[in-house]
Amino acid sequence: MLVENYPFTITRPGDTARPYLPVTIINPENKKLLNVFALLDTGADECAFPASFATPLGHNLQSGYQKNVSTGNGISIAYGHTVNIKAFNFTAENVIIDFMPNLYIPLLGVKSFLSNFTVKIDYPNKRFSGAYKIVINPAA
Image (cartoon, rainbow, N blue to C red; front, top):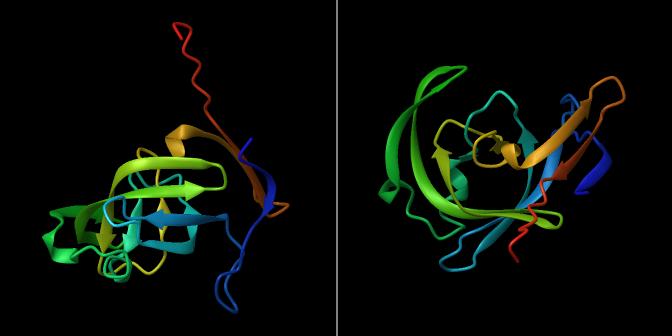
């Protein structure tokens, strides 16, 4: 089990409580890291982080793989860089993340992060639970 009945978090005064997960973002090349709260976004295909995270992690934002992504606000530019995302006792390693100049909230998307979990989001009680898949190798 990763987390059970974790309370929703309010990240800014006056904001709505949402399912944020405390994560550590690590640059696997230089081990620089950031500790942040990232929103569980079941509507996002990929993880996306604010462009402002790139420099503290030691990434040159614009040297990343550039692409256009479709968002709720239209088409936006993104720069792909490799990171590890650690949440409690689970780590998604060598994940290519979209760093986006017009994004202000880190988002944990389905393909590169949430697909590893069974997640229950309890909006009425403002809490969530999640367990990651355990792969057992019968040949071992």
